[in-house]
Image (cartoon, rainbow, N blue to C red; front, side, top):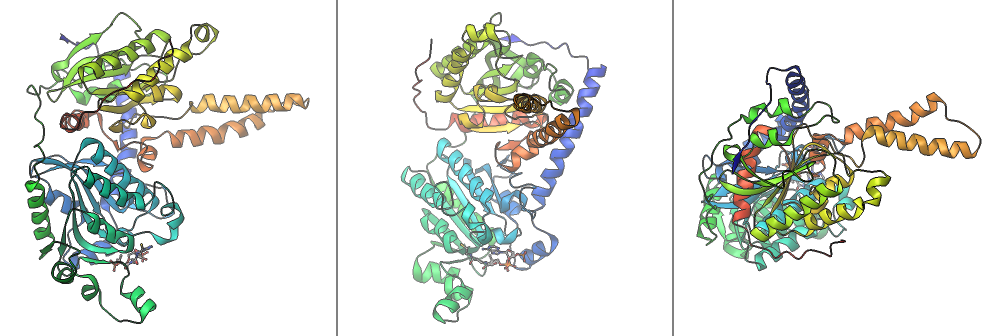
Length: 534
Ligand code: COA
């Protein structure tokens, strides 16, 4: 493999300007992250602690093997979405190591609105289950939830991808031999009661864990019976009388020990080790913020990025002299082989064909793919339409859609329009998708959209014999530009689960190493490409 070299001048004005711009974007993400990990307010935390309960994040850190990483999914979910703060959508999810095995963890945060499910909480739960299913990861549910957030029921109950899908997923994954384990560490009411009862094995904590279809208030209203929560659905009842749960835990710590023990009994393979020892890149990933450009129209040198992400900065480039606006090739991250596709300009017919061909090769050789987006889209204009840019782009979208090797996607710069699809955007089903704070994505750029909308209006007015004044044009452009800029931001993407995580460039190697380990241990799938339009 060739060793990449770097020509970046870290003392240059451009480097300084890029790093400075990146810093302000990182600050915006950091503010959202801090709000997310803070959970509910002080009062809710006090009440939670007085009940002898650990917080959702404490539970997860005590569940995982000491010193191992936690790849959090949807940390920024619901940030600034509802008319009240709902940090992390009242649910902490992610991938971590328990008893030497990779598992997916789901922990309700009862300090946020009683751990209830908001629409984005349901979406987040379903997304984490999708990741678990695709990668064959056991699921551990640490349940502490008031069930549906009742005022928003219409957005999370009746539909196909709403609450009930959580239970169907549990049943289907259990059927597929993917362990489903629950620990009831708080309230588990109504629909929520189906999480532990549908799981293969369930633990329940004395004094705090309850499972019932209707709580004491509802029972009183419905039948007149007066009963306290512990008698109605506590740990003693469910492990001694009803059989709704299997294991009695004295407290949270004990419940987490029992869960670890259940996971360790499962014959799932241990976390896959890399085939060769990991090596650090020759160039420091901390330099990446100075390389990703401040202006979205400026070029980001693809090989400079790779020199700071790949093991030993080694890269075996595919067709380096052909279709040069996209760079494809193989390298390693954390000792795992990976096929990389990274933009180095606009997509032309030749670059599209080259990338489609490279995806095919990775499928043939069973190499996972990493797409690094910095793409304004496909080239437009009569020459390129005549050359069939549409059908060449379609070939790449076809290959990316149907390739059944693990695909990972990171938006490092712009990601616009069909370029987003070709680079394995969210709709193409990457195993995991992330965005750097420097990322930005909308269907078309803000300025271009504003221009298109102003032109449409001009044409309409021209038919009436009128012209658009400068003020009228500005009144059309400004709200569009403002809305697009807001919607293109990483925190906005993270809040709506359009990406699984917003990660820092320096975290990217660790994030990818765990992702590649997960992919290496996951069930193999057969690829059947669609018909390529030649
Ligand atoms: N829908 C909407 N809001 C809910 C809710 C629900 N299902 N469950 C709780 N909340 C809200 C409360 O109104 C409260 O809001 P506030 O902080 O603005 O006052 C917050 O969540 C915390 O609830 P609270 O009852 O004060 O906390 P708690 O820790 O003492 O009890 C529960 C938590 C979940 C045990 C309790 O609220 C409860 O039993 N909720 C109803 C559960 C239910 O019947 N769900 C059926 C839906 S499927």
